[in-house]
Image (cartoon, rainbow, N blue to C red):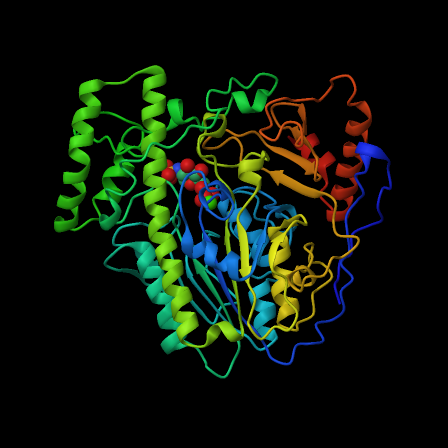
Length: 527
Ligand code: SGN
Ligand code: CA
């Protein structure tokens, strides 16, 4: 039985048919004779623009696409708060940030004593494990096995925190090591009598995009086409104007684009030295011999203005694509292992990212905003072969990362506690079309003032419209018609002709805040 049904539809006419959210009235998973395993693969900052089954403009991701081709692709998948720690907390609790207490990366420590999906899976007889990025500050609880990265982790010769609290250093490239550790857990460490849920959490493709040695030269001949709103001037969008995540103005020349000069200066030079300093001597030689000619040419030409922006964009896209290539290979490795060892019969394979990312849209890298590129996140799933009724192809319903916890719990045959705010996706995975699926999503971002300076905001998204309120040291509303303006360049808030839709969206926003118990008045009063 699905808990936590949404309230009644608003029932409005025409473009205003914003019908409020949903309840998915599927029956209990009757068919389930066996307990299905779950392999949940998550990356960091991987966005749908860089996954070929979503968007074929930039790169090929054949192994990620395999999951979608054998299963389903959610084409309207979103996060509740576009930032790593908060997103991970939403995922394991099934609750929005204000309800799980982990609002941002800088001030929060996850309350490890609270109810989480892994703990509930354990109660339902599952063995649980997590390998890779954790980023919730307190140590993992609810896992029979864990091995996590300290903070953001290292790409090269990475450190891991082990269950006995020791920090160890492994030799090699992080993306490969996470896969090896995951396969090793499946092969040698798990209790073969129990169903399991394994979380494989990668650092790829997080900043500062350090490639694996064998892929240093990949994509070097490719020129990526720039998004047509790269030179956005943010007219009518005050919060977009004041961010600090521009490729031209904020991307660090040494740390991000690797144009290191011992005598040079840049804000993140020290961080770059320490990350690259992790390489052993032989790899460092390979690394330097690749970058040195590019560095020499760069400082000789000394590009400025538009030329510099376009040069940085190409370096960014290439490095990101290289890091992603190693990740896609590793998804292939893990899928092959699961296939060869008979796991695909009874295992749900999920792939998602902790949020989306800007690949130059609006001139940006990073995420945070409720705008499409960062509120969206890739989500594909391959159902167990033994699951009798299965969907195939694209799923269009709007889903959010708070839905994963109830989905896994329902799949495991566990009760879904009534305080979980997400809704199980199992009916969608079975190919059902719940008549009253949610018609709107709630979003709330808090990390300000902080790196990248994206102001606090919350808002509502329907299939056609988005209403956002930026607050704290600003009081600005934005309204977008996603059908007419999918790139969100034209803020319609306050423009004539949009009074009715604005009123309806505000009502819907208030309804969602009540439903989720997010007391905005208090936050506005306290700033
Ligand atoms: C680091 C990065 C930021 C990034 C945050 C959050 N800076 O602080 O660019 O926005 O992580 O990312 S860096 O100089 O340390 O690379 S998140 O994905 O973990 O939320
Ligand atoms: Ca992230």
